[in-house]
Length: 124
Image (tube, rainbow, N blue to C red):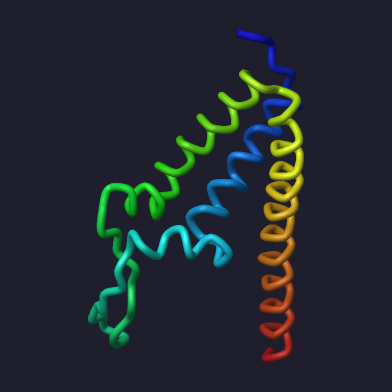
């Protein structure tokens, strides 16, 4: 096995994170998940809600963040070990997008907190 630098390892983590999120949650890949899930209505105390439920093992793998994460890590890590130059382009792009999405989430949550505390102080 080849030595992997710490920066490459972090890039692989970020790339795997972003690819997993892309497969499991993002609207752009909904067409991949759609044949393997069905929508069911669930009664809650707040009313009726619609939930997507996997219809097969493959559907479960596409809807389960932890399961998809393993396969994305195998794909990117294995691809990098077998074809480092080709996969580094994919890893670079996905890791930049992964880091950006983590920063955006952090900034977005903290901006909401700032607005919440500003509104709270106005009410006093």
